[in-house]
Length: 579
Image (tube, rainbow, N blue to C red; front, side):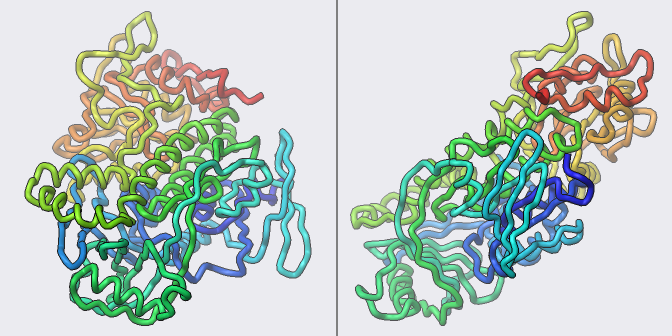
């Protein structure tokens, strides 16, 4: 173990992914050192789209209000082709409950400003100009070599290393992890003031007959992010970028558009690649260090933030002794399949965004006339597109940490998973804990639930008023709170003090109805806001069964005082034992 004062975790890379990892590790009390090879904060933004699931994550982190204040809420996608408006697709999140039913358009530099301030409040400062040049690891820790701006080289010992150091990641290369996939096309991004009569309440996509472009409105009035899917070289078209974009956009939109002096442009060839695993011993990769995507659907930064959030709570649990090291294997097991699925969806999005050929351009008016005039089809497309981009439908149904079905307890038989004729009620195991109608800001229950999810611990919710065969849910809840309180928050939904520990205000039972909890029912939520298990009656056996895959409680169960007759058995999972 690393001596006091030295970092427990070294994070390489201070972009949104590294900042998220550092924030969540520090929020859980770990000593974190955050270094970045750049001389200072980025002055330009690659990523500009923050999707609903990431906003939910920011809410749990406690920074969402600051993020939203700096961005523009976008709820529509409008398509043009050769001067004709084809269709406007408005956001429809009716089948995906969330407190944030929109994509926030915010420059990556603004996002990083908020996150840097947040990590600073936790005592972590970015060390700029400090480059990770190499590392070694053994069973007990990592020794990293850091090159400083003055030419000095420092050897740093840490328990863990997290590589969030971008597409040219030193961490990934030294681990020998290959980015498998394919190269793609060359696009151009530009930030510029644009003079247009189009309202900035939607993202615009337009086709000129030979290529496609996009316009994304920033919160800053009159300023847009522009995307050219087929930028001409200076040899082919010597005009300045502003003139070329003005001509193309005016043709596609069928109205005069004037692009002012660009604040930033970037011509790049993007790739669609990712690693096969995201951990090697005590070293991890996340974000662009693990995968690179087309910018078509704005998934790269959002995916990386979800990875950092997934990893941080697990790494903290192991470092603090609440879990065996095997828990960290679930980082790759959960996130690699999601990354592979995203490669497929972004490949499709890239094809749809660029639509290079003339045949596609001629077919667009016909196709979208049908879409526009058939409301059920339009709604289905809206939901399909949003579902793929928003992150709200991503879950961990197949994770070893998820127990599907509903836990019940049969006296004398121990915990069992009940497979009844009815489907598991939402939110079901593996799903977001917010995938339920629990987002009414006027509801005390909804507000209390949102506040509870900001707690960095696991959450066990008990619906007040239940009785069970052979043991009492209230007693089990009180015992769990006493035994596991260091890493588990136990709350009673509704009722008062005698009904269970730490009551959550729920007048009118709105939260219980939203979560589909009957009296005595329970819900176990992971620190990253996903449901691990649920049951109809909270009992010792059922709760032990839910904890069994996790191996989180052995140390605390051994040290905590036990109340005769109610003590929960220690969990045990050979797969997750440290060896």
